[in-house]
Image 1: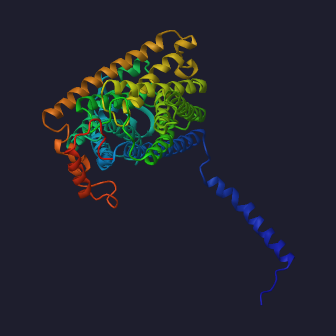
Image 2: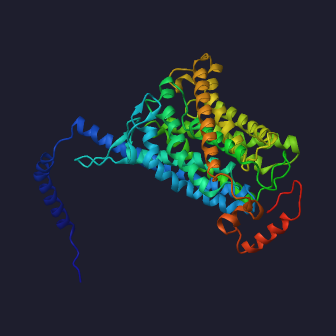
Image 3: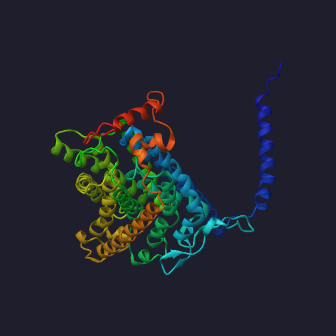
Amino acid sequence: MNKRISPLHRLLALAIGSMVFAIFAPTVVQAADPPTVQSLADTTTKLQISIDTTWVLLTGFLVFFMQTGFSMLEAGLLRQRGVVNALLENFVDAAVTILVWWGIGFGIAFGTSAGGFIGTDTFFLSQLPGADGSYPMGAPGSTAAINTYTLFFFQFAFAATASTITTGSMAGRTDFIGDLIYSAIMGAFSYPLIVHWVWNSNGWLFKMGFLDFAGSTVVHTVGGWTAIVGAYLLGPRPGRTPWGTLPPAHNLGLAALGTMILWFGWYGFNPGSTLSTGNTGLIGLVILNTTLGAGGGALSAMFYQFFRSGKWDLVYCLNGSLAGLVGVTAGCAFILPWAAVLIGLTGGILVVLGIDLIEAMHIDDPVSAFAVHGINGMMGTLAIGFLGQKELTGGKAGLLLGGGFDLLGVQILGLVAVSAFTIAFAFAMFLGLKAIGKFRVDPEADKIGIDAYEHGATVWPDVYAVEEFVEEQQNHSKKPRIGAFEGE
C-alpha cells in the first residue's frame, strides 16, 4: 500500500526545488546568446516567408482544382457523344502544360527580359540550392518573396487555365493530336509571352502602368480570343441546332457542379495573386470584390434572360456568374466594392448579348467561352480605366473618378496589343494544324461521334454501350434531319 506524502514533506521538496532553480537558472540563461534586433528581424522574415509560401501553395491548389470545374462544366453543357473527349482533353491539358511550362514557358514569362518582350533564362528550373541549403527566391522578372518553385507552381496553374478555356469552344470536333499540339504551343509560347508583357517586372506593359491583377487580360482574354478563332476555323459540330437556339445541355447537374467548383476556385485565383499575406486588408478586399462580382453577374444574366424568354434559365445564370468573376478579376485589388457590383451586373448582361452575337455570326461555341472569358475579360480590363481607385492603383484614378484619360489610355493600349497578337497567333497556329491534317477530326467522327471514333468509349457505358451508340448514329446519318441535334 502506498504511503501518503505529508504536507510538510511537499513544502520541503518545493523549497529545495526553488533553491536549485534560483542558483542555476541565471547560468543557463546566460549561456544562450541574447536576442538582438537583427536576429529577431531574421526570425520574423523567415516566418513571413513560411506563411506566404503556405498561402501561395494553398491558393495554387485551388486554382489547379478549377481544372475539375472546367471538366464538369464542359461535360454538362456538351452532348453525350463528346463528353469523354472533353474530359480527356481537360485532363491531359494539365499534363502537357506542366512539362512545357517547366521547360520553356516559365522562362519566357519570368526570365530576364529582352527589351520587355520575352524572357531569356530560367528554363527547366535548373537552379540548385545554395551552399547554406537555401533555395532560390522569386525569379528575374518577379519580386515575390517566395521560393522559385512555389512561384512556378502557382503560375503553372494559371497557364493550364488558358488552354482549358480554348478546349471548351472547340469541343466535339477537334483532332485529339491537334489538341495536344496547340495546348503545348500555348503553354510554351503564346500565353507566357503575354505574361511577360504584363506581369514581368521588366515587361513593356508592366512598365507603362498597365494593370491586370489576376488575369482578365492575361488568362481570360488570351484564352477567349484563341478559343473563338479556333471555333470559327473548325466550323460547327455535326447536327447543330438552328442558329440562335443553343443546343440543349447533356447534364445540367454536372454544369452546375462545375460552375460552383470554378467559383470556389476563384478564391485561389484572385486572392492568391497577392502572393503574400502581408496585407490582410487587401486580401479581404479582393475576396469581397470577387464574390460581389459573381453574385451580380449571376443575377443580372438570369433576370435579363427571364425578361427575354419568360423562363428562369439555369445555363444563363451559371454563365452570368462566371462572366462576373472574369470581369472583376483584373480590378479586384484596384476598385471598391460598389464598383465590383457594377462590373458583375455588366458582365451578366454582356454574356447574354455576347452569346447572341456569336450565334448571329454562325460560330459554334459549345460552352460560350468567348462570351464569358473573351468579352468579359476585355470589359474587366477596361473597367479599371473607368473605376480604378487612385489609393489602390498606385496613384492614378479611373476616368469616372476624376483621374482623366491616362489610366484608361494605358488599359486600351494594352488590351489592343494583347488581342491583336493573340488573334494573329491563333490564326497562324490553327491554320498550321489544318495544313498538316491535325485540326478537325476525321469526317467519320462526325457520323458516329467523337467519343466512339477517337476513344472507343461512351460516358455512360453501363447505360448505353458504345456499340449500340455507334449503330444508332450510323442509322441516324442515313436519315437527313435539317436542324436536328443528333446524339443526345
